[in-house]
Image 1 (tube, rainbow, N blue to C red):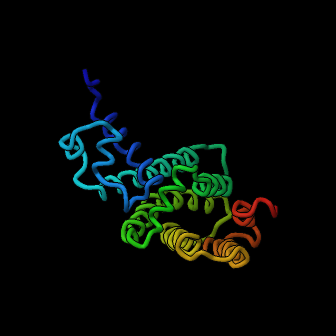
Image 2: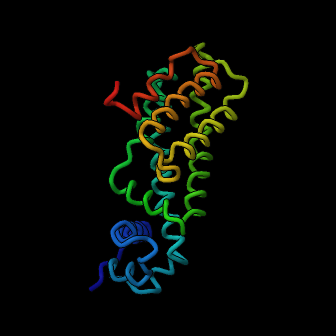
Length: 211
């Protein structure tokens, strides 16, 4: 007798199995039939939750983004942390993906998935910018940041970091990448009106072996 599962559990099972397939077999090679066989479900069950393979991939990416958003919100909610401490922890959590997330990101870097990757970057900016803007406003109250536009400043910083520092897009040599990160730390200080050198920890997060 087939075990009946609640809709959320079944949906997550499909996403879990599809994620494994996309990483091991490759998103472009994996088929809906592969997903059906991995989950041991009928085609009708699949189409009850998703209309296409693309929709499955989008849901997988959104799950990672929402997990990152939730982690950032937990950091911001801690009243004991200063603005700089919150930014440090948020960057740290966002830039330490596990093997599963790295595998999915690698698939997004495929030429055929450029549009989907672009959408994921946009969604990340939309979801994280208000959270980080809240931290900037805290920093203004603490006297460590001085900017008249917290939200817009964060949006520009997020877009530049999400795009320019994406190694899958630009594939910088290590020395070039180090220069970009150092420049980004300096730009953060200027844009947010922070003390010179106060964002040095950003470089240390990317290159801990040099700290």
